[in-house]
Amino acid sequence: MIKLLLKDAFIYTVGSSLSRVLSLLLLPLYTRLLAPADYGSLDLLLMFAVLVNIALAMEISQGMARFYADEESPKAREIYASTAFLFTIFCYIAFTVVAFEYSEFLAARIVGSINHVVSFQISVIYISLNGILAFLQNLLRWQRRSREFAISGFTHSSTTAIMAIVFMYGLDLGLEGLLLGMVSGAFVSCFYLLILVRRSLGLNFELTKLKNMLGFSLPLVPSGIAIWASAYVDRIMINHFMTLEDVGVYGVGFRLASVIGLLMVGIQGALTPLIYSRYEDPETPRQLAKIFRYFVSAAFLVFVTMSLFAHDIFVMLTTAAYYRGGDVVAYLALAFLFSRMYIFAPGNAIAKNVSTIMWISLAGAMLNAGFNWTMIPEFGVQGAAIATLAAYFCVFLLQMASSQKLYPVPHNWWPLIAMLISSTGISILIPIITLDFSNLARWSLNLMMIAVVSALIVLLRLVKVCEIRRLLSLLKV
Image (cartoon, rainbow, N blue to C red; front, side, top):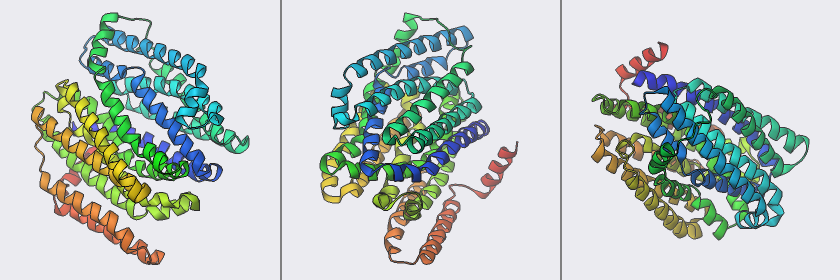
């Protein structure tokens, strides 16, 4: 299981890494051509996009994935995939027609101004293409076609980057140019993926199979909306209590913090299909505990590194108007990790216990809203980041506790807790201590702290020396 995970995760991570590197390379361009208020508008439009992609097609791709994995017959798999795909296409066509009809009303409610009607209409096209793209990418995941998945992601990001430069810099279209670049990337990737999966899809549509998939996926819609609320309530409340410029500054900080998600992309893309196909194997829980130890070790090492050098990265990639975003990176990077670590708590998904997933997500959304409502007026954008971290940590505890009852995994929690406390303390305290240090002194201390965290990983036996040798040998095969 670990060998299969490493191979697939490596491919997913490489593909996503190339995409994130392109995004980071373009960040200086974006922050110079877009004012913080424009960046804030982009964040609000993307927030709307995520909500639509979650709710519109009723999470049908999740239902397809659950039944697709259990089918042995290629024909039955094709019918499930085709039924879900045709349903997805119908939903997004209907959405596009309605959204264009009421574009002025929706633009005023989402962005706060009818001056952004054209930007909103372009984003509607992007939302529909992106929803279809996400479905096709999920189909590749469940077919275990990790290479094609990685290529499609790179195609998407590179086309988006090239066309965004053309529209923003060459034609001076600003926010609309960036959105047109995103539409171009989604369109090219959809075309490429349709060619790849054409033999897995057809015009087969079975109402019975649609009902089966929706029976699994519909209860996940409130859960998905709650997850969306948890992910974006910070920006909604920053816009309410503060300004659109603050939303833009916070959004850039979030984008830098989300780079840590590169670790999650590979693991998430490879691990979930493996768990679904092997959960009955008595060795799987022990293997999952080992994978979790490895993940925590890598994740917290990256988390500490990003947090310590956040200010320097902001100075290098952005303008002075965005520098405040560096203050939220440590909190948001850790929050991002906790928000994605549900993949290590598979018990509810294996048991198809979707109601528990829904209630945990709803609880997380309420906690996040309450924390942000309390902390933003007092501490500004940094308060939003701390509130988001606190909420996601609580959700992770609930997810893990409920999962362990249904599918116990033999975790050794004390070394993991010690790693969390030490890494968080270093990431938050060292930047405060070194605030007035020279660059050389600050960088030297930062590197020393990274070495300390590396040593702790071995001392706490999160990764044993013999396991490092074994992992290296697996990678060579």
